[in-house]
Image 1 (cartoon, rainbow, N blue to C red):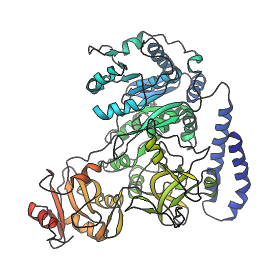
Image 2: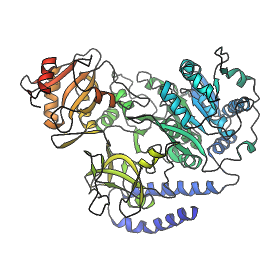
Image 3: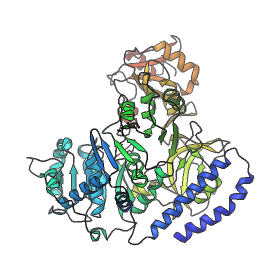
Image 4: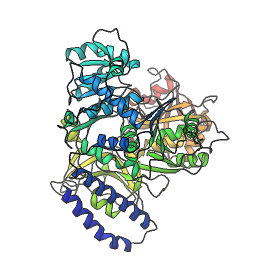
Amino acid sequence: MEFYVISIISASILVVPFALKTFSPYVWLDILYFVDLMRILIMFVARRRRRPLFFVLDRFLEQTAASPDKPFIVFGDESYTYRCTDRKSNQVANALRSQPGYKAGDSVALFMGNEPAFMFTWLALAKLGSPVAFLNYNIRTKSLLHCFSCCKAKVLIAAPELKEAVEDVLPSLLEQGVTVLLMSKHCDTSGIESFSDKVEEASDAPLPRSLRSHVTFKSPAVYIYTSGTTGLPKAAVVNQNRLLTALAVLSSNGVTSKDAIYLNLPLYHTAGFIVGFVGSIETGSTIVLKRKFSASQFWDDCRKYNVTVIQYIGEVMRYLCSTQKRDNDKDHKVRLAIGNGVRAEVWREFLNRFGTINVLEFYASTEGNVGFVNYAGRIGAVGRVSFLHRKLFPYTLVKYDTERDEPMRDASGLCIESPKGETGLLVSKITDIAPFVGYAQNKEQTERKKIQNVLKRGDLYFNTGDLMRIDSDNFIYFQDRVGDTFRWKGENVATTEVSDILTIIDCLQEANVYGVQVPGHEGRIGMAAVTVKEDSQFDGSKIYNHVVSYLPSYARARFIRVQSAVEVTGTFKQMKVKLVEQGFDPGRIQDPLYILDDNAKSYIPLTAELYSSIISGGIKL
Ligand SMILES: *[C@@H]1O[C@H](CO)[C@@H](O)[C@H](O)[C@H]1NC(C)=O
């Protein structure tokens, strides 16, 4: 494999002069990016050659040796240096070793919110050579058990505030012989053992390396659950090799040991764990850890802790922009925002409000094998397409049939590449340097993400499930997730497009857009579940005027459902499936419902009478 990487590197460097000939104003940025990509690959290859094997934990130990007294984790009023973090994790590891139900190398599930103990425990388990499954702390009962069994864990370590959730599934866990540990000093529930007391008493002596001598690059390091919109979560296997490549994320974006990173996304997801935590291990930065994202405390925290780098997801940016304007909005040291999913208009508003911050939008997924970085700062784009990048990681956009929810095929059964400017499904070739490891205990879902016979008979690609578009300047834009579209009157509508239009309206806070079926009609008609801003009223005629002037008739949200809060998952991903199922029947839905009425030039209440004439076809939609 290393030979393969090196030959690709040499081959690619040889083509630089040809790439230079194709003039583009971005050519130097492209080259700089590519040089950086090469630097990362070369470092990766060098690390892969080290003996004994070199893993993320070893990078942490290197940083600890280099700057033991540097703060690594800051959490409220607590601060932990690298040395202190190292010792705390030794204590956790030593305490765990004396648990009869556990031996080094066993899988462990971690059920804990953002707090330093999460990081100590992960490092401890790395020292013991144990894979760790990150359970989303919002899940309960059946889903919790499902996620737990995906990773075949022998031990569950839970935060004290999640005790009740653990008790709900305790009989089942005990039946499977699982050791259940609670991070508190006491616990009187039989079957759950207190663990913090044991950690405090445990030695902080380093762990012998032999405990993790069984770990290879192929060993699972962590299981991260992907928040699917349907069905139960899937556990993506992140192996040691993958985690090692992840070390580069922050350093490739110019983050250094002088930076303080504000980590407010959940640690159980890729953004928080890999980009924030593992990324900081590589750069030797300080992590300012926050239990949960809070729009109102965000900038005060940044000022208080001298934060220089923030992480975001699209909704974070939107929430920040919808807070009350303050005089000190631009008074902070944040220079870089790294994340994904920010919409163009929110991006602009963010820069206006909070000053010149370099917004670095990237595209990646937990299990996927292709990524992009928008290093040129083009608003709205997730990255750039370059010849060299594409040589290294062959990917393409193929035409997608949203109605049938599958890629289109030509007469010979191959996919059809989308021309520039057109939306297509992003698929990425599965290779040695771009592998797809798959989901734990879920062969079916793993196979489902693979797609064969894309450009040639017998080839094998990873299906990202994301619809993208490449413009004439070679910027790539995220359009939608497959399924996040509705088709009405023969037109495909991206739900995000509609929600972007709706949320510009003064009185609306959030809009979750989806398509609902209407008896006697093909496709689905647009519907939005919205929340109204505090101190505002639902203004039907204002919304009507706005919608009519910005959206073609087929794309308009014909029905609006007013909710007191938009239901979200751990990463704020909007939950649509339930809303779609519930439809627009005022007899079944308690929330106020409105219908777009062209005669009244307004959204008017959807009464039972109106509803039945829609169903009977009396009202034409
Ligand atoms: C933040 O920076 C200021 C000025 O450089 C310094 O006085 C202050 O101690 C720093 N605060 C923290 C929490 O590092």
